[in-house]
Length: 127
Image (cartoon, rainbow, N blue to C red; front, top):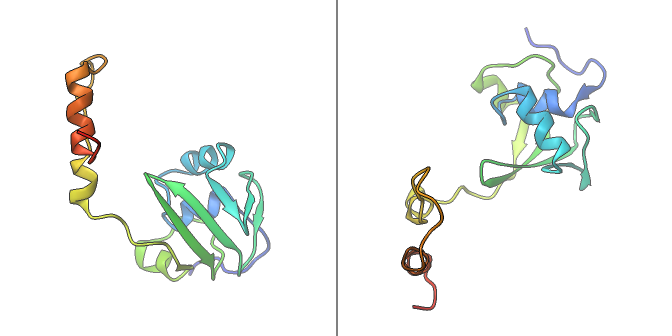
């Protein structure tokens, strides 16, 4: 079925295999940028994982905290992936909160002073 505890597995490969990132290169980039920590220490992409390790991944605007319960080498389906870790992540913010932040259209240039004031009001600022 799925390769189990057969020696070490790279942290970037495991993050991709259990579907925490869309691609392995995104997982490796996150490791190099310092967005992945294993047991509280900054992880390099090739760092080996073992069962029981705590992996913290900051990706897509939220922090995922998972404890490795099963090592896999190949990408697995979502039902199997959920069995490979214990998710201790804080709950994701509601979509309404994320959408309420001021998002500007691409190519519109820098915001004017009026635009900045409006964005400040949206965020619950002084004005």
